Image 1 (spheres, one colour):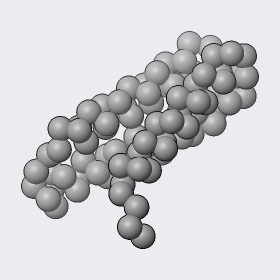
Image 2 (cartoon, helix red, strand yellow; image 1 turned 45 degrees about the horizontal axis):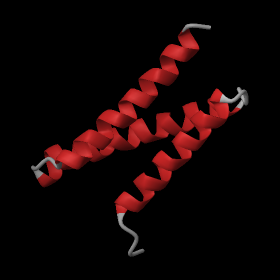
Image 3 (cartoon, rainbow, N blue to C red; image 1 turned 180 degrees about the vertical axis):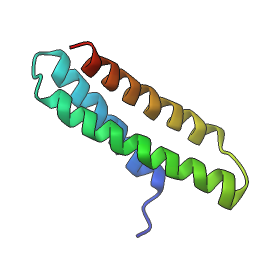
Image 4 (spheres, helix red, strand yellow; image 1 turned 120 degrees about the horizontal axis):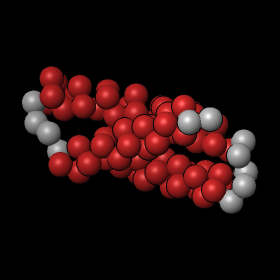
Length: 84
């Protein structure tokens, strides 16, 4: 559709940040929405890593950093759920 994939990534990270801020200021139900979003982001990051490694055959440093960030957010969510 002519929209760069990075624009969707930027919007996803902005939404994750916004949801995390809302949860930090007391809206705990938003934390579940945050979890769904970061789960989808982590799954999509796995797909993009597959494409880089097995289809394209080259890795983008920015993409690897973005994938690491997505996985970190997912791990933070999982740990927060396990600590309850």
